[in-house]
Image (cartoon, rainbow, N blue to C red; front, side):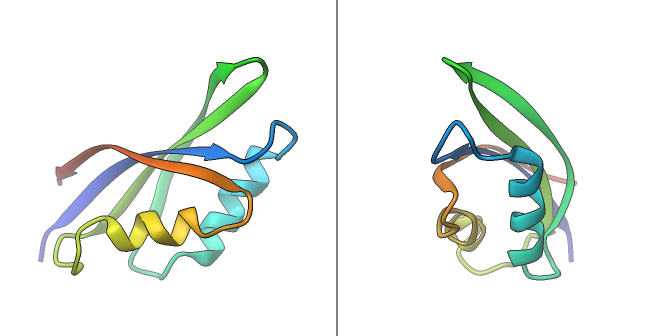
Length: 89
């Protein structure tokens, strides 16, 4: 079974949300077959920053990245989730 790396951009709902805490919240809410390998904060505009997460996952997850996107999107602190890149590793 192969693995995928998924690059996801996560936009917080509010400028005052601590992005380091948001990463930990995301990490705690993901099933064990998803692993956040690294993340960075990317400035957007007017003091708002987004998270760019590198997450590994099995390639045989039904629905591709849809489950991952929904798990992150359904967190109260998240406004929007965009998959930027997917590649087999």
